[in-house]
Amino acid sequence: GIVNRECDIFFRYRFFKIICFSETLYRQLSKKGYKTYYIKYFPEPINNETYGDNKSIFLWQRSEMININTVATLMRDIDIDHIHIHKSPDPGQRFIEPLDEMAASISYSEWFDNSTEIYDIMKESAFYFAPRVYEGIGMGFLKAMAMGRCVIAPNTPTMNDYIEDCINGFLYDLRNLSPLKIENVREIQKNAENYIISGYNEWEKSKNNILKWLEEDIDKP
Image (cartoon, rainbow, N blue to C red; front, top):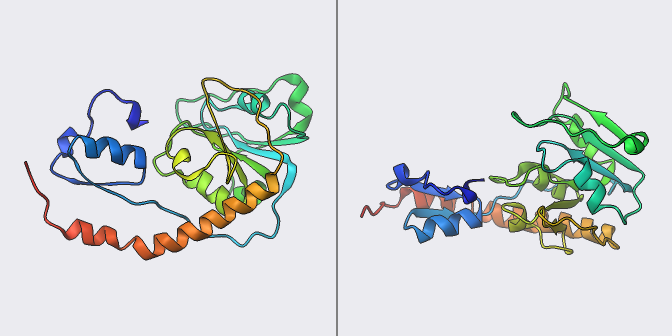
């Protein structure tokens, strides 16, 4: 959410080098003259055995602004018969209860003994809703893309750094929700998976450039 703050919280670090994993933040800091380096992170690809049920959705409700009502509005015209909600909001956020008429189609989880268990549940659904309005990197939705899920996310950083609308996922305007048109979910899933594979190869080639950049002398005004 730094991109929306009016104050310059980076001013005290004006003589530091700043690594940006968000292109939006990189552009903003560069305009102010900060010594910045932008690099796009990608997770390791996953060998997918299945693309999941194309009538099922996974939502981890972390933010009040992206909740079951958001899902219901965006997916109103899509044939969905199951929604799994991971019920664990971020600190300071409250869980939004679904309407009674939706209850029969919803399953829940909270915390697991093993962190990998949540990925097993994610794999059951073709659709994954990115849980936050903004991300620093966005490990969750990137992992979902690596798993070949169709990620549906707000048109905000860093989701829109990675997702090309209607190509490898879907972006929406959180301030103006309207039903999505999704006719090619399997193609979207394959595109997402291939995008991560290609991006990871590039990440592996370029990540050590961070060290080279850090070793360069920094110019102080």
